[in-house]
Length: 62
Image (cartoon, rainbow, N blue to C red; front, side, top):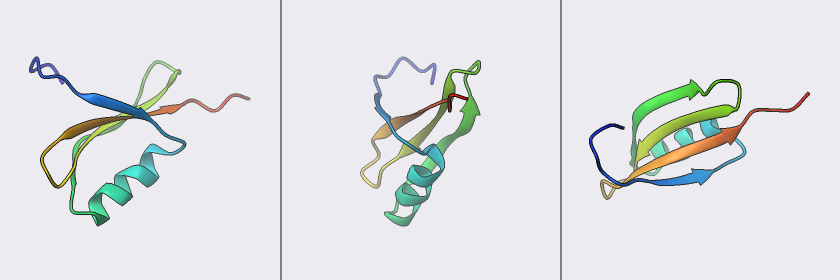
């Protein structure tokens, strides 16, 4: 999110599940889930109040 704003990020077990929960609560997806160089996955969501939150999921270790 290159607009210079500050965002809160949270670590979660499943980015996909959190995206679903945010949608059910009235929020929206800002940036879809993307892989981050094999380290994990991230996405950005907006809660019903308009706050943007970053989601992080660690990559599963073999």
